[in-house]
Image (cartoon, rainbow, N blue to C red; front, side, top):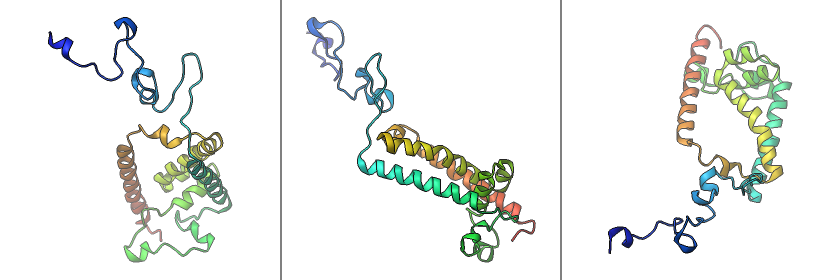
Length: 194
């Protein structure tokens, strides 16, 4: 008996009737075109893809996220951007950032509220000059707000859809950009801002 004949077949590769052609693998395998092959989507030939279903608590999470995003963006429209580039949040009755007294410069999120207020008014260049990472967060909120509402309404699992993304790299790059934006904001505030 040859070694090839004695070797067991890999799962999902068994021969079909009469030993001819591959047999369809399990529903989630690449052989069947299931979620493993298509990043969470399943579809029969010629039909629309079926999105992965979200459990009720994920739908509630995305609904709350959508409502929160609308609230934050509406609040950004209501606030008048502070000319100093920081301190817009003080209009909400919040105290001034203590980082200036504590460490002599802005905290990592200084300027985010001002940037949101500027961007909400369409003043994108000023927003980016004020706090570049804040502008990225604003763009993310604009994109994720409607997407989260869609996920909640349609019952689509956005967690399952984004599962294959390289989250470690995304978080690392985002953290690096945030630190660079903080250093930039520190440099801008060093010229006499509060």
